Length: 151
Image 1 (cartoon, helix red, strand yellow):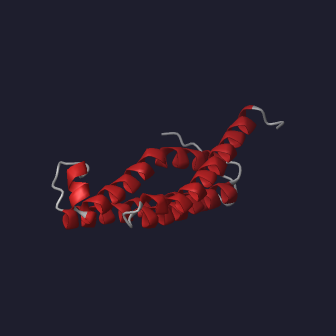
Image 2 (tube, rainbow, N blue to C red; image 1 turned 135 degrees about the vertical axis):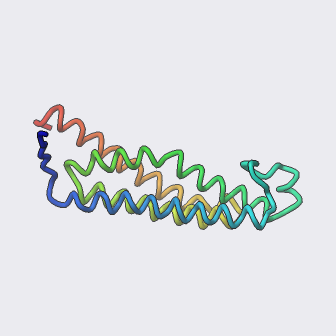
Image 3 (cartoon, rainbow, N blue to C red; image 1 turned 90 degrees about the vertical axis):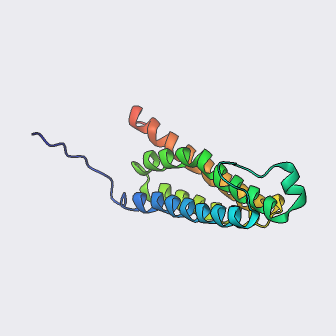
């Protein structure tokens, strides 16, 4: 059996920690959705409360908001994870900080959305989108440096 040695840059140890922050945010969001589902009475396998339920119940609206915050995080998590790993190969501290910041922004986003007033998600969304852009730009630049080291 042969072995392969891979040299990771100094500071790359921050990358797994930053990536794990995403897992903790997703787990927390899962609990929020479950709690709101129970409070609203929306039964499985129904993904969201129907419009009539939302109009009749604030809890149904809050469930939809919690569910949407969680779903929205799931929709972008692969971009963040991929970008963080690739960015971390050249800039581990920056990539990790951007990823950890994105996780924090998702908490702000979720807390705002979970109020039942979707407009309160906006500060977390703006911060998260800037951090996601940072992760993607840093990851893209890192990938280009592997192809074109002169950059």
